[in-house]
Length: 68
Image 1: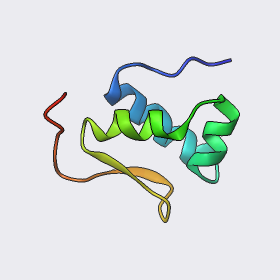
Image 2: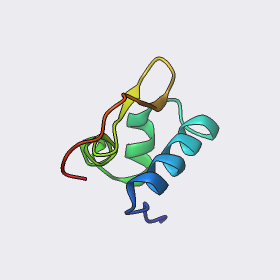
Image 3: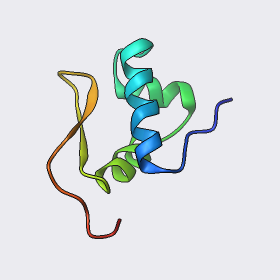
């Protein structure tokens, strides 16, 4: 099994690439990796990215979380 990157910026690149190349949606990816989608969305929210189901990718929302 592939371990997901811990760094949010690297995770963003990895997840968006997997969504583009292999998965129809975030739920399918999370099922395959046996991970809760909230873990991914919360981590990427820290760097200002939100999941867009219409585009099947995480998109910049224009703000960083103060926790990061």
